[in-house]
Image (cartoon, rainbow, N blue to C red):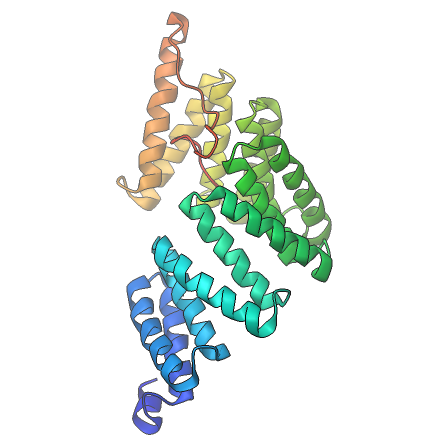
Amino acid sequence: MEMRTRILGLEHPDTLSSMANLASTYRNQGKWKNAEQLEIQVMQMSTRILGLEHPDTLSSMANLAASHRSQGKWNNTEQLEIQVMEMRTRIIGQQHPDTLSRIANLAVTHMNQGKWKDAETLEIQVMSMRTRILGEEHPHTLSSMANLASTYRNQGKWKEAEQLWIQVIEMRTRIIGQEHPDTLSSMANLAATHRNQGKWKDAEQLEIQVMKMRIRILGEEHPHTLSSIGNLAVTYRNQGKWKDAEQLEIQVLEMRTRILSQEHPDTLISCYIHVQIHCANVTESSHMTFQNTQSIPGMYPLWVYTS
């Protein structure tokens, strides 16, 4: 980037590409501020030199939106994604894969803003078009189905979510195998949906499967594995299996404290759950009542892990 800037000038397309690549590297390293600063520069220069509707300009806007999304700047993300989506729809058409990806990104942003109805409308649109254009078993189509299932779950539409997750799991198992991370995530999400409906046995069976495979594939200390162990602890707790729940939660708490630090949000959640389980175990004979872990529609309880 420095040599291209010196030889070609700051506004040369190759220099802008180098800046965009560096910004992407920063983003992948979690250096959101560095990425954001470069992406703003690239977007402004691309807009001035190439025009607002040039593919490179639209890509720079989409990259900046991704950096905003990573920092939780949902309103900034939404504004950029709407702009990019509208221009791509006008220039290359609504059914182009790039346009569908932008619509899908906007739907995810709406999910993170709690705009479930807006997210649902967009996700149904994307899923329908991807099914027609790419086929039901294409990875992008399956991702759309999974996103819609998550949105249903967040609205308390457990049956609709459950049906979609079962479809996604069956197809992903057949196409990419049961041990693929995407398949395991789908299974974990179906287990969470069972949990939301109080289907503790179904949830337990799936969670044990996911936990064992993640331990074997990712290792015991991987964040996804720890989430699986924590989810199973929650399910045990809701079945009154206090000893089993407590053993698992102590395991998660100790590993998160060692790996992430005592003050990490995930460690603090584990600490809270451990206290809840321990208190329930000790006071079970006194018939104390504890709030169960079924989700209120549109919300996750504090102590339910996401995968």
